[in-house]
Amino acid sequence: ARRLATAGFVAFAPDALWPLGGYPGNDDDGRAMQRERDRAEMVEDFVAAVRFLEDHPDTTGDVGAVGFCFGGSMALTLAIRVPELGAAVAFYGRHPAAENAASIKAPLMLHHGELDERVNASWPDFEKGLRSQGIAYANHFYADANHGVHNDTTPRYDEEAAALAWQRTIAHFERHLMAGAD
Image 1 (cartoon, rainbow, N blue to C red):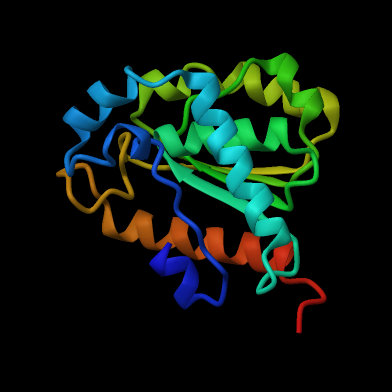
Image 2 (image 1 turned 60 degrees about the horizontal axis):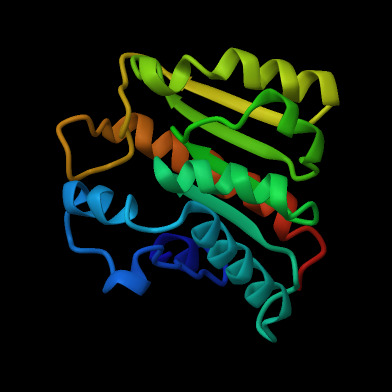
């Protein structure tokens, strides 16, 4: 959220674990807590965050979503659930079923680590769904990078790939969310 704010966006980072006491400070405990939450309820929390930003007096009403891993999956889910979403960016998030692409109206950007076999396995089917529906998207694979390529707290972090991915993300949001903004 801080990085988006410094780039000139109003940013809001909902904590999906807030009803359980909030993010515990590490991903292993966070994943365990996440399994305690109802997935549909979490999605509704994120949809409510989009609605909050759409109506916020400091915004244009154009809202984008970006996320990493679970958040990347959530950004794609929001693109399906909120047709008026202005743009979505998913960093190595699980892909929805191809048939859900028909609900997407937002321009998408996806970032994948080339070595992330688990997430990448579902990309070809989802891409077919996007293409069959004529959905605007950009997909980037980062060579020799794994899941979490943008996470600077792990050994999988790749500074060069992360910087390029973030630069592309900001450009995507500027193109789709700031057009016509003062």
